[in-house]
Length: 318
Ligand code: MEV
Image 1 (tube, rainbow, N blue to C red):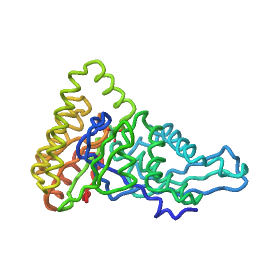
Image 2 (spheres, protein in one colour):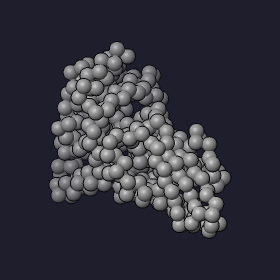
Image 3 (cartoon, rainbow, N blue to C red):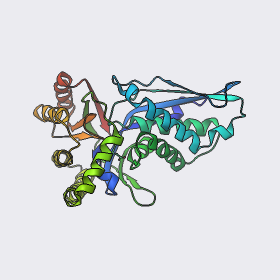
């Protein structure tokens, strides 16, 4: 059985650029410390068709039920990508146990953390000596089970961790690690609503096709914004980063991917002292995050959000 500590794959928070990143523009993403692990066992004498999945990951209510079919499909895609059935002797089956401390909630990249941790477990069990890029590729193939056209940002953050600038291209994605002066203190909170990435990404695509001029205008505004955000991050200008997050949230509202519940949590965070707040990830439910420059503000905002959000977390991106 693989050493689960070596099958870790991180959750992520998109700081800038969810949805826009699908259309080949840069985004900024940070991995959270919490991760998913996968233990893979080859069970002798089992059926060669069988894959038993034990899902011990913590999750918000409904997440696992809503994502069950997509999750099964994602696992199958990763197993197929690494041709796992060919590595078995025909008389064995697989038992996969997912765990770790990453709470599964829309927006945190739980699906990518799952597919990357599975890629790592396959690599270890069958001694494939995969490169990190090959692990990332396995995670990406699995992500297609959760939604048809993933940008690759979630699996890349799950594989490499840290803070990344990520850009999807016609060929392989381009990504670089961002070095920052100080860790970025964040509070993030769930609306309690599990969104379907397939549906929301598909709807944005339909709206873009119906009104290309509307979408292009938003995309241009976003491109100017993410450039400023990267500069602010490089210079450690946290107040500017916060106000740019607020602008990114407005663009998400115009893109129709925010919702009343997210807007309410964003307002609560700002009123409690956050210097910037936005939705993060798929939207129409899922998560919001906010920038809280000191421990004191982080605690205050956490307490305020705890009163209105079903789940709230603190993290430091570095
Ligand atoms: C989901 O975490 C982020 C989206 O931009 C989709 C993607 O990039 O694949 C909504």
